Length: 325
Image 1 (cartoon, one colour):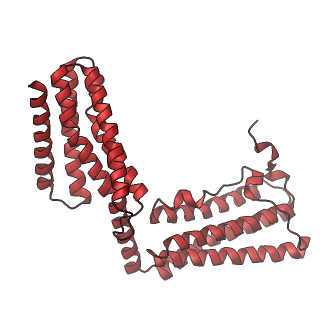
Image 2 (spheres, one colour; image 1 turned 180 degrees about the vertical axis):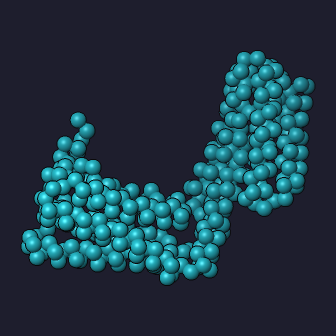
Image 3 (spheres, rainbow, N blue to C red; image 1 turned 90 degrees about the vertical axis):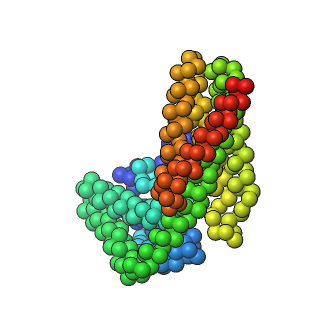
């Protein structure tokens, strides 16, 4: 049996008082989540932070109304019941799982929060035969649907076209600085710098397994080195490039991928087949790097191609010549 699940109540077993108590605690949790989002966004995206402040205030108002209703019907003592106490009740993702995923992801999560709550209450209301409970659940569903309308109205009021464009531009720039730039640097390093040791080993030994092991070691070693170098070189406080941990992971992982791309073909036992496949992979990698430079870094495509392809060709030639010597 899964620990904790045996102690959960089914929604159908809750009394009207418990349903009301559950709604109160849910509104309180959502208010705190929205305020957390607002605090995270306030420095870089003040307009969106103001929207979440307004949504938190709406949740507080609904919570107060629910508490007044509970006091009128059942008294001042509210039972302690939360989402995790009820089987099948919608869950909220922890804030720390969302905060690193950008402005659009936070907006989407907030919209999903409201949809989940409204859908749950609507379904629950449709499946109950008790009139007072059905009315209560319907009222809660309407309240959650009203939150969505409030969010839209607040966004229209606070986030005018210029504010939204400015925030989206800032978010895109942050994405480039935190993920694309270090990831691209890692991909270039992994794809180009590992060419020499891999192909030198290949032509020197003509042993595919040895070549694969050298490529694997070079790729993983370069990934670890690039990741730590990126993370240690800039804490992001002055440059505004974002979390060093994120940049380190982006750089390290892409470096490893860049090297493994032309190391993995040497799992093929036939040397020349493996080498031809590896060269095809190198060609694809270099063109992908040129495309990324053009797409995200605004580098003219032909200049990017010249820089990457010529550089890669020189490193490959050096490795092949050394291995054949």
